[in-house]
Image (cartoon, rainbow, N blue to C red; front, top):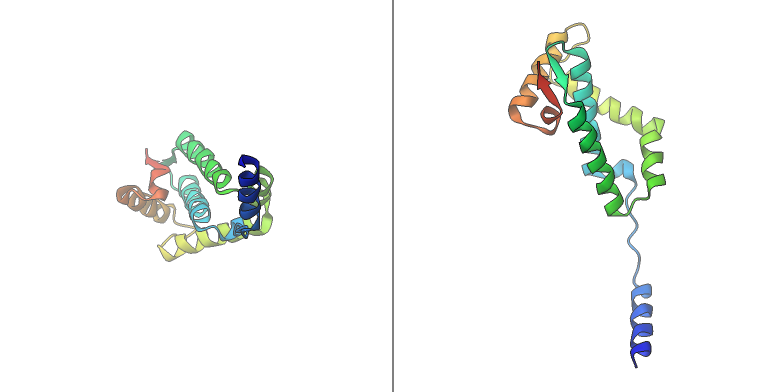
Length: 133
């Protein structure tokens, strides 16, 4: 009887449609955090009075990878996404657009500092990756 029940249960489970994961490039939580990390990186590299919280950022990157694994993405899928030149280009472009819309200009490091200080003050994801010197 137990075997018959187990077989019926297995058949019922296998008959259910498997929900496919959305492509990583469309997963909002992951992309938003990668964009935030890129913005924080640009601020820390351009603004002389702001540093990156590198160890914290590394920990957040590990958490993000763990999040993706728990959602069902394989290590190969994650690595392929992170190595994808088109996806990097897309993420970088979104970050640059955010910076320019918020007043950053290439020849004005202080414009990046203003953005960084505002993000730190608002305690945003971007701000959590930065620290004033």
